[in-house]
Length: 629
Image 1 (cartoon, rainbow, N blue to C red):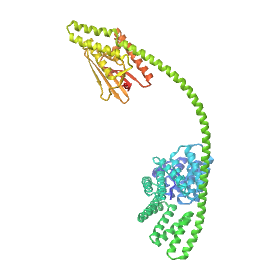
Image 2: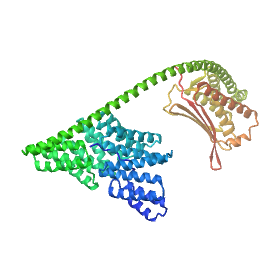
Image 3: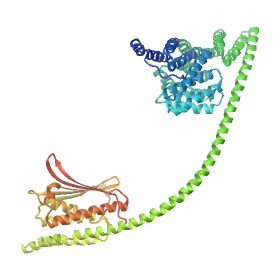
Image 4: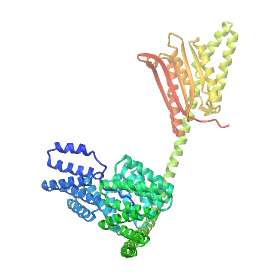
């Protein structure tokens, strides 16, 4: 038996609600609480469910609360459904629907209550084999839940629609809806997850895919054990019995059916019991235990007659005819065979109606698909013309902007060349050259010829490297380090070893890693002149090159007087020169960023420990580039 989802929310804590009810004085709140308590009893005690729903109905009429009246009718209808009285179930659900339609409100709460009533009617009609009415109500409910984006209740509808498609032998669509219900409800609705898993298992069982069937049955059982739902659990035990019969494990099948019987009796679920007794009767007939088979067949037939279940009556009459035939009681065998023929004729009429409905649904589906294809064709033509017009506009804009970008690129390249020439000019400024030559001359005068020759060689090497670099936009990082090494050693001479320095490169940086030529020297010079030279003690400059993902990181750190202190002393020619060099370097980086369309970051930070100034740090992040060989 496939398991539908009942259209009521998960079970509340009944005791808590009863405690609140005892203290409540507001008549409308009392009615609402009685409806909530009725709702909470749906899985455990249908008698109490009906009792509190009837109390809510009386109070809602007394207080003229039409909304709570509709909810009360809904709960009463579901309680009758659980008892197997489908006629009274539909009467009360119809009353709920009429009230809600009369309210005609766009409030989400009222619309979703209507959807819940329609969904419950769909379940009842499905159990009565009135699949056309069941689908009509289910799709009306689904439309509301899709509009209110209520995935929890929509998942229940997917499951119930799957039940209907399975009932009319459309296993493909049934499995589609069950899987959709299973996936949608996995994290938000344990009850529907368990029901849909059980139904998926049944379809795989009918397809003789026993391992897949067992997998979904086990998932369903685990969920039912964690979330109480006796009716669903009873149906699952019935399904397990059919799996064990396929595996020829009859004792395991009987054990499952005994569990199902206990569960159904506890909630007085006659519909589920009818199936359970029929399954037991078939097992005992197979074991040639005619008395037990006869006992359970009669039980199943009695319930089928009470519930007006055509297929169940037909199966029971057929089984009774077989039993009496084996008992050699031809009179009763013939009697039940005639009853079987009568029920089969009724059942065939139902099946024909199902087939007609299936054909009608398929026709409607094909009609919808044809309309979709025609609409899609019209939309396609519309889109083709739209795309052509947009394409022409975009082409015109592209040509316009490409020309504009080309002009912008040429301008940026021109600016970059100018900045590179200015950088070269500043790199070889007369003040620096004069100081270097004066220091070398002093070595000569003081008979330090070896030192003079060594520093002269460094000076000439720095001049040569500077002239070489001026011809290139980028150089290798190793060449940059070599130039900085020469420059710092010369500045050490110039300032009489006022500072020490260190240059390091991390091992993961490739040899052909590129850096813009003549880029870092102004920042190093700034660290010397404005940072460490004004110190009373000896200074230190640390230069580090790192590679982090697709960026080259250049860090220049000094332990000098800091940014604020150096600003107060910027009055000399050297400072004016340095300020210009820093500004040109900054603009050069900005121009590179625009030209390459890659992010370049520059930050100059004063290092502090509370109020104590520790120095200055320059951090430059460049996109990782390589020199082409």
